[in-house]
Amino acid sequence: MGGGPPPPRGTALQLRINAETMLPSGEVQPATGTLTAFEIPSGPGVRVDTDGFAGYVCNPRFDSLLAKLVVHSTAGVDGALGKAARALDEFRIDGVATNRGFLRRLLARPEVAAWSVTTRFVDDHAAALADAPRRCRLRPVTGTEHTWCARRWRAASSRSTCAPAMPCSAARSSR
Image 1: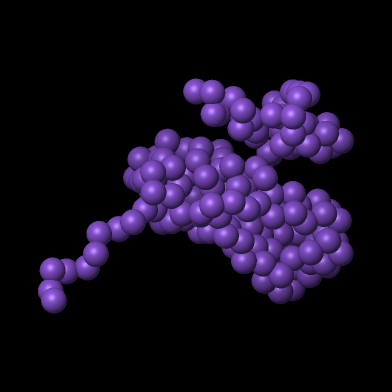
Image 2: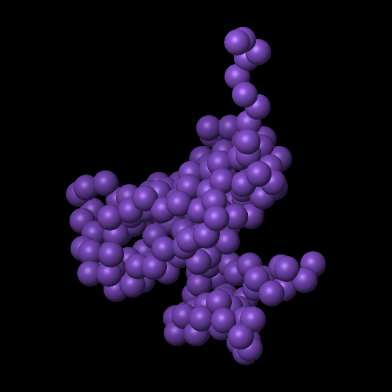
């Protein structure tokens, strides 16, 4: 029987979406409030473990975990990072501040893509990764192939800031 363990069949990442923000000092600050919207991403290789729902009241005295996002890709680290970034962008959580922006900025770092991070990486780069208001880069689009993008534009245009946007799925598939 021997032969050792079977070869890996892809790359998986787990991200914890928390009701919290990160201060430039690297300190985490819990968030409170009531979830007014809670829509999770789905699709092949995307799993979300959660008890969150619209109407859920976040209490800062307990664990701030709202959801665990787990993605799997057979396209290596780049594929898993891209899938995780898209899933984060597809999450809709309103009513409570979350660490989604922090996670999105973390995934975008070239050191993460190169898999050259240490347990001190977040501490050493706290200012760059901290939640900061950013100008929305989404643009209004129309057409059935841009349904997801149009929904993101409407959601983002109703508030002053949003997480950095990825190109729409139609643009990604045309590359």
